[in-house]
Image 1 (cartoon, rainbow, N blue to C red):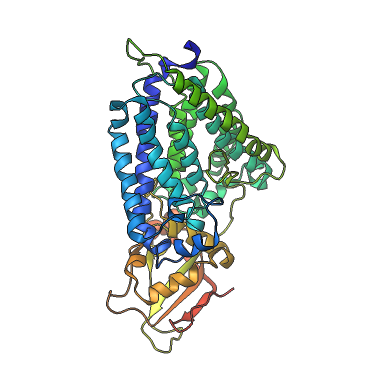
Image 2 (cartoon, rainbow, N blue to C red):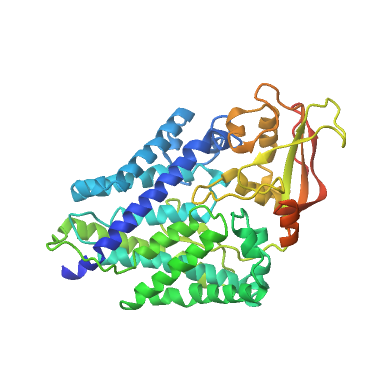
Amino acid sequence: MDWFIAPEYWWSRLVFQRALAGLYLVAFLTAALQFRALIGERGMLPVPRFVDRVRFRQAPSLFQLHYSDRFFAACAWTGCGVSAALIAGVDSQLPLWAGMLLWLVPWVLYLSIVNVGQTWYAFGWESLLLEVGFLAVFLGNDDVAPPVVVLFLLRWILFRVEFGAGLIKMRGDACWRKLTCLYYHHETQPMPGPLSWFFHHLPRPLHRVEVAANHVTQLVVPVLLFTPQPVATAAASLMIVTQLWLVLSGNFAWLNWITIVLAVSALKLPAGAPSSVPGAPLWYETVVLAVAALLLALSYHPVANMISRRQIMNRSFDPLHLVNTYGAFGSVSRIRYEVVVEGTYDAVPHEDSDWREYEFKGKPGDPRHWPRQFAPYHLRLDWLMWFAALSPSYAGPWFGALVERLLENDRDTLRLLRRSPFPPDAPPRHVRARLFRYEYTSWRELRETGACWERTYVREYLPPTRLAGVAQKS
């Protein structure tokens, strides 16, 4: 069937596949380096405890069948290895069926991780990587031109990502409709980047233009993805430019990057396909069409959610994360709060004790420490600390366990931090947490002090705590 394939998207597929494999590599590397402290056997939210109360049908995962830290590490590093092989193009050297199986491996492994990752993996870009990764299995290799139906489904994901995000903004915080959200967002976003301070200090009229442009990009441009070329390419290109602007303004893990990768699949690149492109075998056409029918049927609930006045963000409607709903920043915080964690050697701690502050890698702490660029790498603990500052209820399941591990100088937990003020063989006797308000400094204050933040004490978050009784203050 000539209509089944689109040879003109040969190079778009190639770039898409290699870039997606790169994001898989980042995701597996993040898991391999952070899992022991977060969800390992001695982690803050251990996988064994989770699988004891959640059935396989609710959260399909290899770790439902067996879990050990060694097995998890093997799966994560295997995912890194397979991702690296896909970046190198090994799938194109294999028969079509074998290339599809190779793309299936990282999807199965990452699904297994996400489905036992609990709150540490409750981010929209986890489901987005799985949804896109599942479609990549059926995109083919050098044995066949890209299937039209799979290219359409990739645009369908991109449409839902952007249009859903646009709708949640228009239905959510009034500042999106008033074009004023960027007065606050760059200062209060979960993890600022090295340029966020400068973005915040742009003129307010420009902030209003940014918000208006965002509404156009998310509510109008996505419709153009389904128009003929070159309009669809122009629409995808505009989305890529917008996402790169967001990459510069903050750290959003791989959310912006996977959106860019999706947009690449809609580009009609100048270079064409090889002179002779083999036709698609019948079994391949049958499998692809059956999968497409399944995904379109599963789209019912995400679409119903998207058009609902009670639209919710970032939810999976099936345990395999095949078709999901997305959205971000339906509301924008006006004030930035941060939880500052400190420890002391004093047996009876007082306010004037020698309290020493723990430094996190990404979240604001020392006002003079300039933020770094980490995305697409995902600092999971830093992100959850942002939620903890919004409300102690967000941190209830894990914050007490974090404090306990700091009191033990747990090696795996300390690896998640930028700096511990205590040597490995001498843990603190007490740990406390305090809530501060953080605000960007002005240009004058930056020149005079070198500090990008100024902070003001708000209240006690967790009283001085020792190992005998770790409890979260509510």
